[in-house]
Image 1 (cartoon, helix red, strand yellow):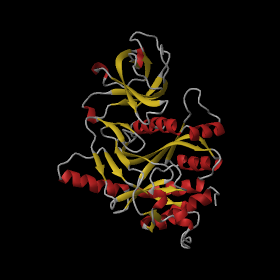
Image 2: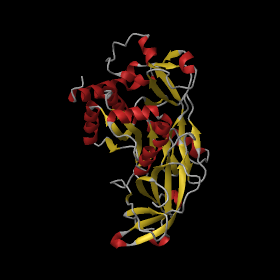
Image 3: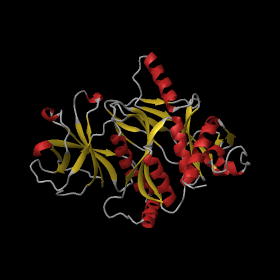
Image 4: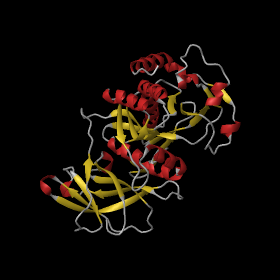
Length: 390
């Protein structure tokens, strides 16, 4: 566009009930931070060639101020006279009457049966071109299924062939969806260069990962009630009850009984499990050695690293890695008690952790994850044998 450069990624139609009859087109993009934005307009393309123009607003999804590049949301209200029709596509221009040089299809994903499912998990760009984590991945996906997750959405840079086989297996069964991902502009695309670049430019990586998280959120605002952003080394364990559904239902029931608004985010504390905790103890002979999470049952004796959230799709507008960023009106956050649920963060070491307790803390045995042991071992083993990974 004239005067500045912006990398457009995806566009969505948003007419959720919380907006009381209003509808928006939301565009996710990446660009450098600007002190002053030019005027922007959305040219919305409808059936039979009709074009409607609407003034655009811009929201920076902030992370580190020292980042050089940021994820932005550009959004435009759909005019009331067009509100019953979903635009086919949208262009972004700096002048109301300008000829557009960009075009994005507007997505409006609806559930096939008209009903939202409960839980989906979103994972940022997978960058494992040379490191094979396929066995851990199967265990993780099977545990998520036991916990009540209907589908996991992965964004993929580059992955090891065995990881690709696992993802294809679950994709064919409707439990995984993989969205290809590249870095914008002139940033590297070749696997080794890209991997090295992400490691060296960590703050920019954290800033840019807001794009797949928000893209995943908007792909699913009409299909799922709740979204959880998790990494492969994290798992949310209800400490009272068995499933995520039981956890959220109990919290919501308490809020309703008190006449309180239901939360937009359910913040759950994380606890670290270091590989060295396991290495100082013998493996449990009742559990196969390839069951990484079931073998790592020694946790740090305090909570560290900040919470992550179960995110409601009702009123949330933008999300960050760990939490909700913006909502329709004021966001309602609920801190889930530590004795009710926690997220176990499995780590090789304390490298990169700012919390000194990671290196000085004491480990405590916690076998709560073993309540899933029977089904998890059976299901994981069956898949690993089918894929010839063991």
